[in-house]
Length: 176
Image (cartoon, rainbow, N blue to C red; front, side, top):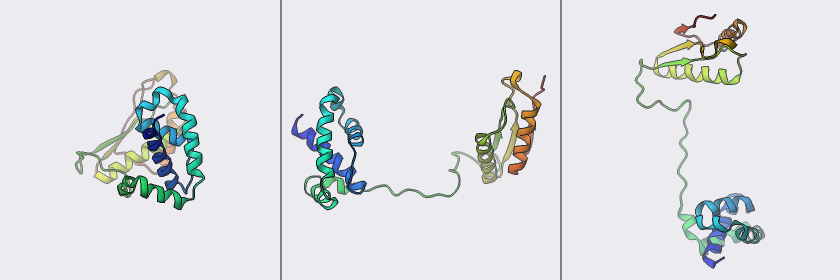
Protein backbone atom coordinates (compact mmCIF):
# COMPACT_ATOMS: atom_id res chain seq x y z
CA UNK A 1 0.00 0.00 0.00
CA UNK A 2 1.43 3.39 -0.91
CA UNK A 3 2.18 6.11 1.62
CA UNK A 4 -0.63 8.42 0.45
CA UNK A 5 -3.25 5.75 1.18
CA UNK A 6 -1.70 5.03 4.59
CA UNK A 7 -1.74 8.74 5.35
CA UNK A 8 -5.42 9.02 4.40
CA UNK A 9 -6.31 6.01 6.56
CA UNK A 10 -4.34 7.48 9.47
CA UNK A 11 -6.25 10.75 9.07
CA UNK A 12 -9.56 8.86 9.25
CA UNK A 13 -8.39 6.92 12.33
CA UNK A 14 -7.17 10.07 14.11
CA UNK A 15 -10.34 12.00 13.38
CA UNK A 16 -12.53 9.16 14.63
CA UNK A 17 -10.40 8.66 17.73
CA UNK A 18 -10.58 12.35 18.69
CA UNK A 19 -14.36 12.30 18.20
CA UNK A 20 -14.62 9.26 20.53
CA UNK A 21 -12.49 10.09 23.56
CA UNK A 22 -9.19 9.02 22.01
CA UNK A 23 -10.20 5.54 20.82
CA UNK A 24 -11.21 4.20 17.43
CA UNK A 25 -12.05 0.75 16.07
CA UNK A 26 -10.76 -1.22 13.09
CA UNK A 27 -14.24 -1.78 11.65
CA UNK A 28 -15.12 1.91 11.83
CA UNK A 29 -11.89 2.97 10.13
CA UNK A 30 -12.30 0.24 7.49
CA UNK A 31 -15.86 1.33 6.76
CA UNK A 32 -14.98 5.02 6.51
CA UNK A 33 -11.87 4.26 4.47
CA UNK A 34 -13.79 2.15 1.95
CA UNK A 35 -16.38 4.91 1.69
CA UNK A 36 -13.87 7.69 1.04
CA UNK A 37 -11.17 5.77 -0.86
CA UNK A 38 -12.99 3.57 -3.42
CA UNK A 39 -9.81 1.95 -4.79
CA UNK A 40 -9.35 0.14 -1.47
CA UNK A 41 -12.34 -2.07 -2.29
CA UNK A 42 -10.23 -3.99 -4.81
CA UNK A 43 -7.83 -5.34 -2.17
CA UNK A 44 -9.62 -5.34 1.17
CA UNK A 45 -7.63 -8.37 2.40
CA UNK A 46 -4.39 -6.37 2.07
CA UNK A 47 -5.93 -3.26 3.64
CA UNK A 48 -7.24 -4.86 6.85
CA UNK A 49 -3.82 -5.63 8.43
CA UNK A 50 -2.65 -2.09 7.61
CA UNK A 51 -5.75 -0.57 9.19
CA UNK A 52 -5.31 -2.78 12.26
CA UNK A 53 -1.75 -1.52 12.62
CA UNK A 54 -2.74 2.15 12.20
CA UNK A 55 -5.64 1.83 14.65
CA UNK A 56 -3.34 0.21 17.20
CA UNK A 57 -0.84 3.09 16.84
CA UNK A 58 -3.55 5.74 17.12
CA UNK A 59 -5.18 4.08 20.14
CA UNK A 60 -1.75 3.96 21.80
CA UNK A 61 -1.52 7.76 21.69
CA UNK A 62 -3.01 10.14 24.22
CA UNK A 63 -5.85 12.31 22.98
CA UNK A 64 -3.53 15.34 23.21
CA UNK A 65 -1.01 13.58 20.94
CA UNK A 66 -3.80 12.72 18.51
CA UNK A 67 -4.97 16.35 18.40
CA UNK A 68 -1.39 17.57 17.92
CA UNK A 69 -0.86 15.20 14.99
CA UNK A 70 -4.10 16.38 13.43
CA UNK A 71 -3.03 20.03 13.83
CA UNK A 72 0.40 19.32 12.32
CA UNK A 73 -0.51 16.91 9.51
CA UNK A 74 -4.24 17.22 8.83
CA UNK A 75 -5.35 20.78 9.67
CA UNK A 76 -8.20 20.56 7.14
CA UNK A 77 -10.05 18.34 9.62
CA UNK A 78 -10.10 21.19 12.11
CA UNK A 79 -11.61 23.62 9.60
CA UNK A 80 -14.66 21.46 8.99
CA UNK A 81 -17.48 22.93 11.02
CA UNK A 82 -20.43 20.79 11.91
CA UNK A 83 -23.75 22.07 10.75
CA UNK A 84 -25.76 23.18 13.74
CA UNK A 85 -28.58 20.77 14.35
CA UNK A 86 -31.98 22.26 13.92
CA UNK A 87 -34.01 21.71 17.00
CA UNK A 88 -37.71 21.65 16.59
CA UNK A 89 -40.60 20.58 18.68
CA UNK A 90 -43.27 18.48 17.09
CA UNK A 91 -43.64 17.11 13.61
CA UNK A 92 -41.90 18.57 10.57
CA UNK A 93 -44.10 20.81 8.43
CA UNK A 94 -45.80 19.34 5.38
CA UNK A 95 -44.63 20.88 2.13
CA UNK A 96 -47.40 22.74 0.34
CA UNK A 97 -49.94 22.16 3.10
CA UNK A 98 -52.48 24.93 3.62
CA UNK A 99 -54.26 25.59 6.89
CA UNK A 100 -57.79 24.19 6.83
CA UNK A 101 -57.18 22.08 3.73
CA UNK A 102 -55.24 19.15 5.16
CA UNK A 103 -57.06 15.82 5.35
CA UNK A 104 -55.31 12.89 6.98
CA UNK A 105 -56.54 9.37 7.27
CA UNK A 106 -55.87 6.40 9.43
CA UNK A 107 -56.44 3.10 7.63
CA UNK A 108 -56.15 0.09 9.91
CA UNK A 109 -56.95 -3.35 8.57
CA UNK A 110 -59.28 -5.21 10.95
CA UNK A 111 -57.41 -8.49 10.46
CA UNK A 112 -55.59 -8.51 13.81
CA UNK A 113 -55.41 -6.80 17.16
CA UNK A 114 -54.04 -3.25 17.24
CA UNK A 115 -50.40 -2.71 18.21
CA UNK A 116 -48.05 0.20 18.92
CA UNK A 117 -47.58 0.83 15.19
CA UNK A 118 -51.29 1.51 14.83
CA UNK A 119 -51.17 3.96 17.75
CA UNK A 120 -48.17 5.78 16.27
CA UNK A 121 -49.80 6.15 12.85
CA UNK A 122 -53.09 7.35 14.34
CA UNK A 123 -51.38 9.87 16.63
CA UNK A 124 -49.25 11.30 13.80
CA UNK A 125 -52.34 11.69 11.61
CA UNK A 126 -54.20 13.41 14.43
CA UNK A 127 -51.27 15.74 15.21
CA UNK A 128 -51.03 16.90 11.59
CA UNK A 129 -54.78 17.46 11.60
CA UNK A 130 -54.47 19.68 14.67
CA UNK A 131 -51.39 21.44 13.28
CA UNK A 132 -53.19 22.46 10.08
CA UNK A 133 -56.78 22.73 11.31
CA UNK A 134 -57.82 19.95 8.98
CA UNK A 135 -59.84 16.75 9.10
CA UNK A 136 -58.96 13.20 10.06
CA UNK A 137 -60.71 10.24 8.47
CA UNK A 138 -60.89 6.71 9.83
CA UNK A 139 -61.12 4.29 6.93
CA UNK A 140 -61.00 0.61 7.67
CA UNK A 141 -58.95 -1.18 5.04
CA UNK A 142 -60.73 -4.09 3.40
CA UNK A 143 -58.00 -5.38 1.10
CA UNK A 144 -58.14 -8.81 2.72
CA UNK A 145 -61.79 -9.36 3.71
CA UNK A 146 -61.28 -13.07 4.46
CA UNK A 147 -59.17 -12.19 7.53
CA UNK A 148 -61.47 -9.44 8.78
CA UNK A 149 -63.19 -10.21 12.06
CA UNK A 150 -65.63 -8.12 14.05
CA UNK A 151 -63.58 -8.54 17.25
CA UNK A 152 -60.54 -6.92 15.55
CA UNK A 153 -62.66 -4.03 14.31
CA UNK A 154 -64.00 -3.53 17.85
CA UNK A 155 -60.52 -3.77 19.40
CA UNK A 156 -59.24 -1.07 17.04
CA UNK A 157 -62.17 1.22 17.90
CA UNK A 158 -61.63 0.67 21.66
CA UNK A 159 -57.91 1.40 21.27
CA UNK A 160 -58.55 4.62 19.36
CA UNK A 161 -61.08 5.73 21.96
CA UNK A 162 -58.54 5.00 24.69
CA UNK A 163 -55.99 7.18 22.86
CA UNK A 164 -58.59 9.95 22.73
CA UNK A 165 -58.52 10.26 18.96
CA UNK A 166 -61.72 11.68 17.52
CA UNK A 167 -62.37 11.30 13.80
CA UNK A 168 -64.25 13.77 11.63
CA UNK A 169 -65.41 11.00 9.33
CA UNK A 170 -65.50 7.20 9.39
CA UNK A 171 -65.59 4.97 6.33
CA UNK A 172 -66.36 1.37 7.07
CA UNK A 173 -66.56 -1.09 4.16
CA UNK A 174 -69.36 -3.63 4.05
CA UNK A 175 -68.28 -6.74 5.89
CA UNK A 176 -69.33 -10.06 4.40
